[in-house]
Each structure stands twice: as structure tokens, then as C-alpha cells.
Amino acid sequence: KNEVEQSPQNLTAQEGEFITINCSYSVGISALHWLQQHPGGGIVSLFMLSSGKKKHGRLIATINIQEKHSSLHITASHPRDSAVYICAARSPNYGQNFVFGPGTRLSVLP
Amino acid sequence: DTAVSQTPKYLVTQMGNDKSIKCEQNLGHDTMYWYKQDSKKFLKIMFSYNNKELIINETVPNRFSPKSPDKAHLNLHINSLELGDSAVYFCASSQGQGVYGYTFGSGTRLTVV
Image (cartoon, rainbow over all chains, first blue to last red; front, side):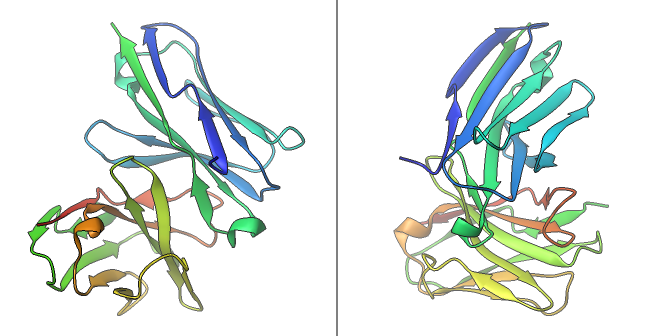
């Protein structure tokens, strides 16, 4: 079992749909990181959060520390949102390094 | 004007060779990292380094060594390459522990034949 789990593993949506990607982890963390890996392989840091909620454009990330769970939401999805979304948790249990989830592959169809 | 640049983008080499991957960041960040992304697409931390401290993931073989000539560069040296070293290697940087996020390089695809 991975220390950081994501669901779903794969997600196909129609353009305009509201998308939710989930991340759960098993230990107390100091920070959670959401990243986007484009089909070409490049990685972009989306959010770093340790509590509450952050919003950037059509992307919203939330975290519930007590439930050890974070969600990434995409509103009004677009084909250019197609990518792999990865969450990573940093914890003293991991030596303050980030442990990465397996990623969620999102395809948004026009 | 690339923020974190890695070279080369592709590297094909034979088993047993020694190779280096270079990484440079022009963001003024004080912490740099090397990650390995294996065939299953998992990203795993290999090293994190700032002026004060090198943190090594204990699972990384000692054939891998980071070299930092200055705070803008963190190169990855790999000795005696093995087939299992084939992967994509990403360099990244952050300010401190990355409260504002990390910036990743575009990756180096290493293939050992």
C-alpha cells in the first residue's frame, strides 16, 4: 500500500464538466503539494497547502487535516487540462521529504 | 529564460559507463532537488540540497552523487550505470521548504542499454 493514494487512477470528462481528484495519506503531514505533469512530461507545481483551501483560476485545492485527505477541483474543464495530476505529502515520518502519489490521468474531451 | 534547465534532455549510454546530468536554476532559490520518475511514473526524491545540508534518500545507491559548485547548480553524477537506472530524472528548486511551490526542470530521459 502506498503512503499516498489517489483516486481515481484515470478520469475522462467532457469539456465543461466539474472535476474532482482525491488524495489521501496515512500519516500526519506538514504540507501537501499538487502538481501537474503535461503529456510532454513537464511538471508544474500547482499548489502547496497545509490547511484550508487555495484557488488559482479554475483550480481549487482543499485539505482536511483531520481526515488526512485533499481534493483538487477543476471547474469548467477544458481539453488543455488533460494531464496527470500528482499529489505529494511531506511529513516528519518521511524525513520531511515529499512522498508522491501514483497520479491521476485526466483526459478532457472536446 | 528557462527557470530550471536540465541538460541533456535525452541520454543513451551503455551499462558500466559514468555520466552526469546538469541542472541550473536562475530563480535565486536556495534549495535544489533531484527526483527519479520510474517506468510506473512514480516520482521519488533522491536528494535535496541547500547551502547548509545535503539530504540523501537512503534508498539511493551510492553510485549516484550530487555535486553543487554553487547554489544555482546541482549536477547529478552516476557511476557504473545499470539497466535499472533507466528513468526520467527531474531537477527542481524551491525557496526554503517550498512554501510557494517547486519549479521543475523538463526532465532528462536516461536509457541504459
